[in-house]
Image 1 (cartoon, rainbow, N blue to C red):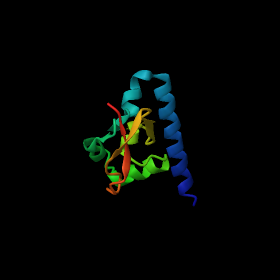
Image 2 (image 1 turned 60 degrees about the vertical axis):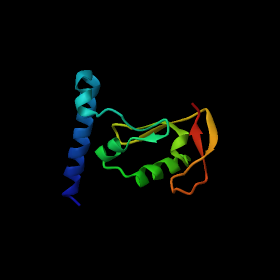
Image 3 (image 1 turned 90 degrees about the vertical axis):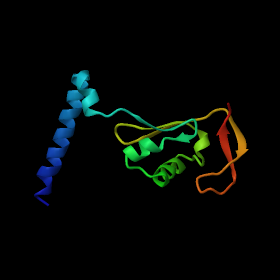
Image 4 (image 1 turned 135 degrees about the vertical axis):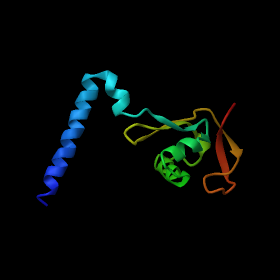
Length: 114
């Protein structure tokens, strides 16, 4: 237990130091904080970016279900933020169309109108 306290304090100290550094000097922000990465745009998954972040489609689908999104077609833009959070913008103009959902069930799926 006593060995863990210095480790935790070191991590918290570094986190505070780096946060202050990026706030005080905006020019170092790109180095300290990675930019947001597009995972889904207009209902289409960017598999290259999923691989880059070592994220499976199942993990992405799980995160989307927590946000009450059942199908990729409901998503206008989904980004993985630099801090690891998922940001999702939903499509506003949706129409029902037969398509495959996450599990390939063939149930109706909402798709973006062109």
